[in-house]
Image (cartoon, rainbow, N blue to C red; front, top):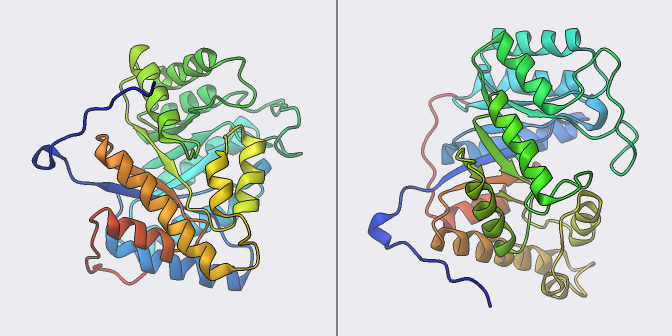
Length: 301
């Protein structure tokens, strides 16, 4: 039987906070799409926005350029992703120093996927940081950064068990992590059970649920399989027959994501991290349903 979750009275609820994740553009057209999304979402005054690092560290320069522009042209608080992959410790440390010089005070520290892709064996750089824990320790030696890390409600694909995975999370916290964002999930009970387990093991930092609005079900399901995230049958059924019906698919995606986040708020969750895929409209609509309202920025993005 599903465990009963006590819902908070409306008057006892803290404000909702959202953060948004973007990826650096590869082309001029993609850059235009990215900045349209940023301009659309910025007035919601997110807690922070993060910019990803490509597989194998492949977008290092583009990530840095995007983060610098966010600092220079907006009031947003950017968090730069950083991985251990395909770089020496000296190279990684140099990136951290450049972020500090650019006015970035928040880093999302990740081990990163193998250069050959998810599912292949990970091999650390011979002169690099071998793990995300070592990377966090290196960041801490350079400056007093806010450090966000990943968490896996259904465990990392390479972990032997959930308990082993939580031990890794605890090591990252001991090294200096101040927040964790989860891998995306679709069944809220997965997140809630995970939260109970990490709290029982003494993990007290915020564990922010990562939410992915399903822009394309087949792509999302394929990525979920590679990363160890489950896709419930009911979700597949909701998108069944909509491969060529983009408009209906968007409506279904909005309904699914809204249902998920509203249920989480009823269970006491106040912080959400949205994987935007550089598309704003669906995320904006979900945030509106959560009660977030646009406010004018002081700078033009």
